Image (cartoon, rainbow, N blue to C red; front, side, top):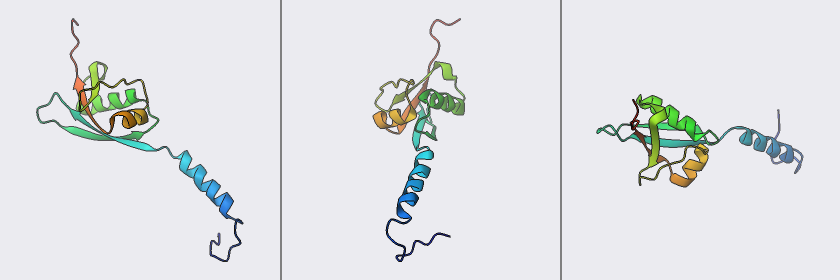
Length: 113
């Protein structure tokens, strides 16, 4: 057992313990949370999705589309202000740039037969 009482000589364990705590905190991925609303439904249902901040946003888009049972390949995610989000970035970048409240728009394939 480690004795961290005030009688412990300074710097005897503090350095290695702080280094170990830092290693443990950086090994755990930070998470971001998105509230995604389905705009095509008049009831405006939403899902809260928690994902690692380094997850590709394409995975967030696909997961959200599956949750709402809409096709992911023809869906888009926009901000509440109507700004389209490029899915070719990480979830952490989207969270920092656009915040946590987003909208899912299932689109029809125009001209598809």
